[in-house]
Image (tube, rainbow, N blue to C red; front, top):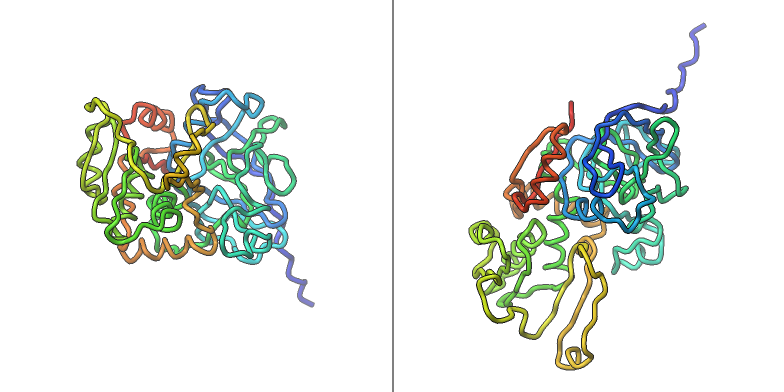
Length: 352
C-alpha cells in the first residue's frame, strides 16, 4: 500500500544578510538577521532589487524615533515570493512582486470607496512593526529589529502583508520596475490623479529629483504647454528636458522669489524639517488650493498593474531615473551619493 503524500512543511525561520541601522545616521552594518516565517495573510519575499528613496535617508537620519533602532530601512523594492502564510490565495511561491509601502485591503471604508488610497488596515506604518500583530519579523540574537514602512527591503529577505504586494509578470525587469513601488508612481500620480493636469496647463515643479521628474513626465503626457523646473542643481536642467521640462529656473541665481502666483499646489514627499504648514486665510480666498498626496493617489493593487503595463508598452519612462546600479555590499556608498545629491535613484542588486 502506497504511503500517503506528505503535506509541505511550514516555512521556518531563515537567516540572511541585512543592512542594519543601529542608530540615527549611523552607517549601515551588514548583519546576520533571523527572518520569521510569514504570519496569516503575509508573504516572505526574496528581495531582488531595491532602490534608495529620499524618504529612507530622511528617516534614517531623523532623531524623532530613537527607540526604533536597530532598524532595517528600504521600501522601494521588487522580489520573488519565497513562502506564503495562512490564508494567502493571491500569491504562490515563485511569483514576482512589487512591494509597496502602503496596502489595499479591499474591504475597509476607504478601499471600497474607490476614491481613496488611505487604507484603514494597511496604511502607512510608522511604529516599526507589522500591521497585523504590531510585532517584528526580524531579530538578532532573539532581540527585535524594527521594520520601516512594514517593508524593510535592505535585507535579502523580508516579510510583508500580502495586501502590500502587487504581482507582476516575470518578464518585467525587476531592477527597474522597483521604482514604480514609490518614487516614479508618486510623481506620475501627483500629475494625473491629484493635480489632474489638463492640456495647455502651466506646471511648476520645485525639485527635480526622481519624484519631480516623474511629475514633469506626467504633465507632458497630459499635454501641459509649459513645464517649469525649479532646482538649485544646474545639472538637473538637461535631465529635466528629457522628462518634459520646458523651462529651468535656478533660484540661487535670482534676486526675487519664484513662488509667486496662484493656482493649485500639491505637496509630495517627506519634509526634512518643520513639517507644520501655515498660511494666511487671504491666500485661500484669492483662489489658491493646497492638496496633499501620498503615493500619488494610487491604490496599489488596483492601479499599479496599470502602470507596470504602461512601462511594458513604453508609454512611460522609468529607466532614465536610474543613475547608478550597485551591489548590496555598497549600500553605504549609495546612501552617500544620495546625501551628496549626486544621484537620482541608486538601484541595489541583491546577491543571487
